[in-house]
Length: 422
Image (cartoon, rainbow, N blue to C red; front, side, top):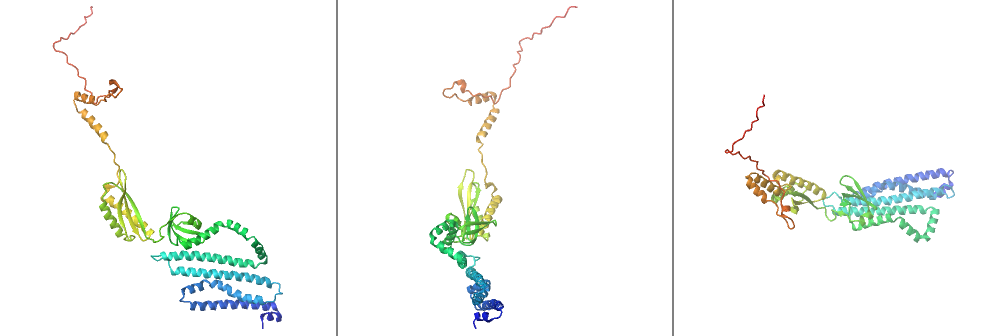
């Protein structure tokens, strides 16, 4: 007996319809639960299929009951007033559930592929490449699936379907307008596909963008997120990334060479410094043993520039190694050669010569000092008179004035006043 006949011959068709709808939902849920357990047992050793089943559990809990409910709704008599609206509403939910199911399946496959190639490995270049491609392609496909799903849902409305048919005639103009309006969005989407194919950057790459050092934490279909070293997050649109230059420190390998600069005196012992650099690098766990080099790279009037090159397997370890080398070399110079640290030299020979000449003149007899002082006077230049060329200079040593003694042969005349008369 068909389901339509059950509703027709039943004395209470609405009650019968309600019982049939509830039974359909229950059967659909039970079928989904049994099928999920069976698939999990079968695919226990199949990593990709197992992850796919686990990711699609929640959408399947909605898809299977709605599928059985659809059978009951289409079997119900069409003359019932609410049946067309119920069919349309359940159909919309069913399309949404199917779209969700496909998106979950794509996400499950992408997550499984990423799990098979962990980024935490020491040599993770291939893993980062796979992670980048998987994320961008998966998110692009999920976006397309959502657009298609919502488009199918909109076509179930007769009014919107008529509007779409009328717009189809002017598709060229509408496409131009939509393209101009959505140019940034479309540009980022195209840039995302370009990054997925050419891969100038990958997940966990160390980059320097606009002077900011950090690691690529996330790549979406429109932007990337960079985890800066001080726990900030830098968000960069993909289109900007394609159009501007940037530094990628882990493009081919994560190995890197670091530099340490020191300014020292010209007498700095280079052999001792090279031996100390080798000792510091060998004692540091961050050094990979590839390179340890010390060179004089520049010189100024008062000091020389010394550059140390050290290598590590990645940039984070190299930063720590550079700090250790800088601190170790400075401490070595302070402890053993403090006099070879940068110093400022001043020339004082002119001032010393003048002071020495004055001290020499002060110790001469008056006649010799006068003669030496006269010899230091400037000769008259061309066009100058002898009086103008003379140096107006006070003598450094002035002889004390001497009194001449009175002659013994000359008498001394004493004049007395006469006494007053009484």
